[in-house]
Image (cartoon, rainbow, N blue to C red; front, side, top):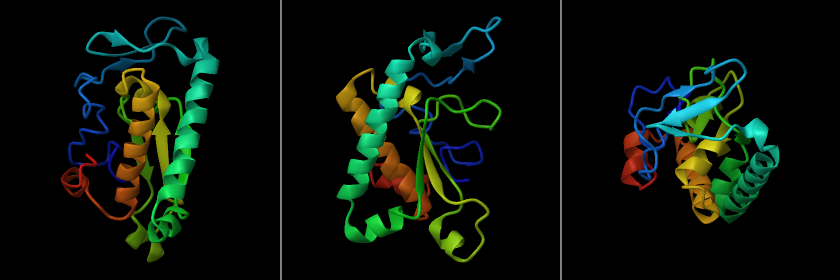
Length: 174
């Protein structure tokens, strides 16, 4: 796994949902707060329970898919060919128990392209976007949500191409 996951030794401001300044640094989520209740909060702010407003989250997932398709179509030809090698998954939030921080915006799973092409890959490369966290990072604004989805896709595709956090930050994709 590459950055935006717990296995990356480097601090990742974008993955921590701190890049835009909307999120607090604690990233404390508690999915077990009370019998059957849901609570995910950072610095005292609690996100709504997606199961209570399923249509809203489906709309966000649909919007994220639309932005992803636009993103891929707008890439230069050489990057578009490379991006075809990477699947894009859209989920409401990171699953607890997979070792991900609860406030991840996205994660690249798999080996970077160079290693995968050498035949070392165990799983196909994929980018996973977490719409709940992207929506929160965007301050509940659709235009900013689209921008956050796009930025996160660039960031995670950069990991597939072998860029580390420092490389991405220097390119404005941190």
